[in-house]
Amino acid sequence: MKRVRVLLADDHAVLRAGLRLLVDAQPDLAVVAEAADGAEAVAKARRARPDIVVLDLTMPHTDPAATIRQLVRLGVRTVVLTMHDDPAYVSAALAAGADGYVVKKAADVELLAAIRAVSRGCRFLDATAERASGARSRVARPLSEREEQVMRLVAHGFTNREAAGRLGVSVKTVETFRARVCEKLGLRSRADLVAYAMGMGLVAEGDVGPRGPIRPPARRAARS
Image 1 (cartoon, rainbow, N blue to C red):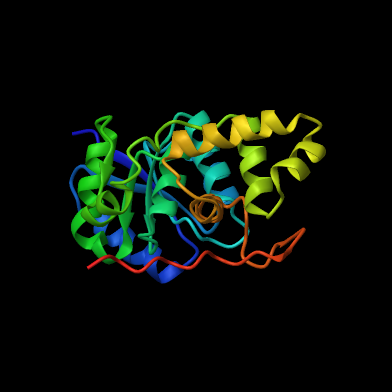
Image 2: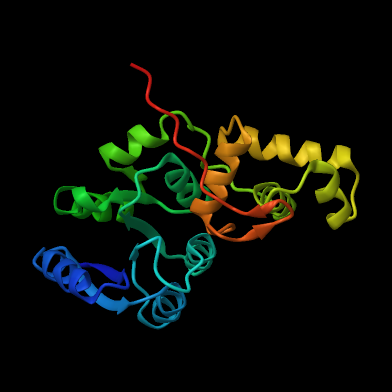
């Protein structure tokens, strides 16, 4: 039986060791490499040619969306394994090209199923991620470079007019691209857009925009 080749990318060595034991214990799976950040994951993927990369979203010095895109260009499928169950993170990973999303608290149950499903060409979301992304069913549509530029500026607090000036385009053009971003990703407010941009690694808490440091938007209380 040909084993599915897996690369583990997480900055916690103890967690990687546990995942390696879990994966290598399966007769149809094998860990072929490990990495501690996004750049190392891409470099080792080039050399080891895994079928699947299991990728943490919040490793140091790592742009998760850019890492996923680089792995996609290498022809490698990606299963995100993360502590984040916020819809913004699920949306960001899927829009960047991830094939699977598993929240770490469900890893012992769901990760092996995710690796196997993704290796067969299927998309896999664990139950938590599926609930989190349910309101954003169109997250798979990727953003263009210009859409991403507009989203980054708006998330940093620039008005449409200020963003237009920085990009050298009309205000109407910025409005159009902003509307496309929201339509593609199922976002309904600037707070949604900021949360998405943070999850995608385009904006970090504490970044300084024209109106001061960026802060995560307050989570809305669930309706009873």
